[in-house]
Length: 130
Image (cartoon, rainbow, N blue to C red; front, side, top):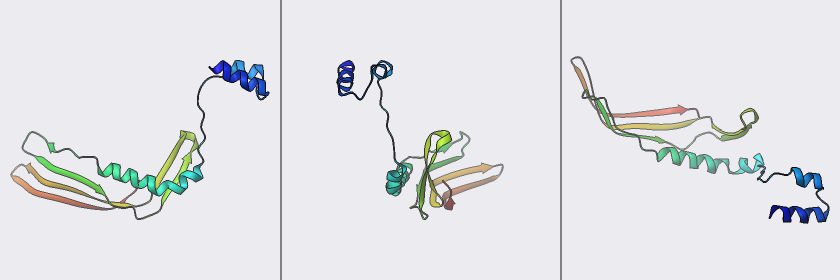
């Protein structure tokens, strides 16, 4: 099939015989960063939803110390999302200067010598750099 397509191009005069002989099958694409810039907020919000949907496991060290019912929720971003390319790493980078989040553990127990701590935990994180 490739030979038939190449023959059509050859007939049209856009390819030479040398071009057909050295052409390999494959796909090449190009991405305009300005198009990504327009949709970056939507992409970043999708990443935040993905992070929020990841369940955190319960921890138990086998000695009676545990943390159960763990969760971490990223709140909405507060600063503008930046998007840029890193040519050296051949990557596209999304960066948000400031996020906030909350870590919760519904039940924990920790014992050290004669002191035992029990309860629940809620930690508010006000500045998370991503």
